[in-house]
Length: 338
Image (tube, rainbow, N blue to C red):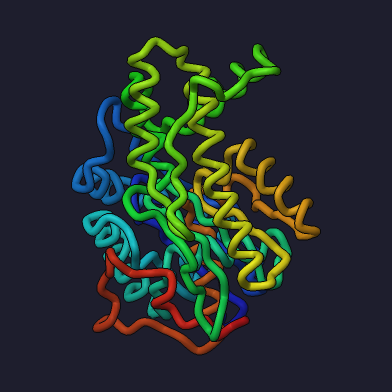
């Protein structure tokens, strides 16, 4: 970062619009964010984009005030270039281009998924982990090989977070539904410490190194329709879905010979998947890591950090190449900094 100035990061891939900062040494600071929370149904991309547009000025001022900064303290602007919802990404990119041009500072478009990895590595002091990326929009198991973060396995249909939110919505709970499911599952197992999965079996989502969650969603809803309690089904749903994710994570550790597992994405906030990853890693004489929850969810700080890293490695984004790519893959980004 030129002159020791701050890097501003703008995250806009889906429901959350977030501005974050890292200082000239790459030290991250908490984001200022606002999230679309529809009262019913899922996220409408255009409505989310309108939300992001409406909050852009307020969040920019909030993040500057949080560290007593002025616009002249900003030395670079990073933003999520993809993947994500097209209308939402375009708002973030437009805001980033506007601020970059107004301040005459470098623009850096970054890969949202890679940003999750880098904030996790930085926060957990990981060297070369396997990343278990569990979010609303995606689910992947990732490892760095030959200069890129390679996808060793991924969901074949919907992300695990999307599946949990859809199940919660079917029960009448608003977005986000994952925390509600976690709470109900915990209450059930506390009240039934000797609970069995007998009668609560669900399809196992593993497909080799890949995963598929639409079938388990349908089957969980059928258990509800058969009269099983909501708490018991939430518990079973978590146990099956998380076990599948941990299994592919363990296979990735075995295939690559790595000894660190790093959780990332919004579902990594869940205490149960953290616990299951720790148990698996301990059995393998490996370690499991998860960053603070504010850096698991979508946040501008992780975008700022990756922008800071890439700028220090000589990469900038020109206006001509600053368009968004809603289908950008984790392994599309060259990792030249580690």
